[in-house]
Image 1 (cartoon, rainbow, N blue to C red):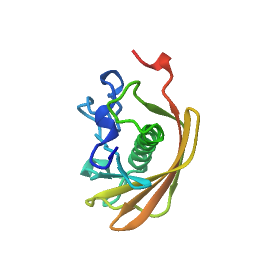
Image 2 (image 1 turned 120 degrees about the horizontal axis):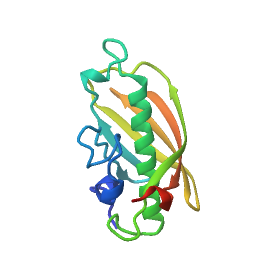
Image 3 (image 1 turned 180 degrees about the vertical axis):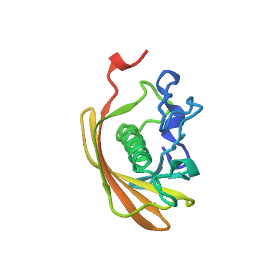
Length: 157
């Protein structure tokens, strides 16, 4: 199965596609999209001027948000790959964050496309631990660790 040209979030069921960071059905959200690229995942995001912390630099909460969503997207991609299943197969994989760590390594500039890269650190049962980097102009500005767990049935409509 070739996952490269498909964003996993585009296949999340409608009832769990409202996330502010990656939900395709949230009109006000970021609409982050995570793609498989070999042993890594990749996403791109261009911060808007209103994502300002101080003039010229991105607000840290935005960085945490996109790390969070790319981490859970990376977990979903890993689950589908592990079972050699397509994103539209049933039952769907949808992950939520159990733990998030973010290290801000240097200020992240506004006005440039950010690249997020993800890799799986551990995959065991319904838990996937991912490491995500955020780069601007080719320099890593933030790094995060996301402990993602499969969404409990009680969270679904």
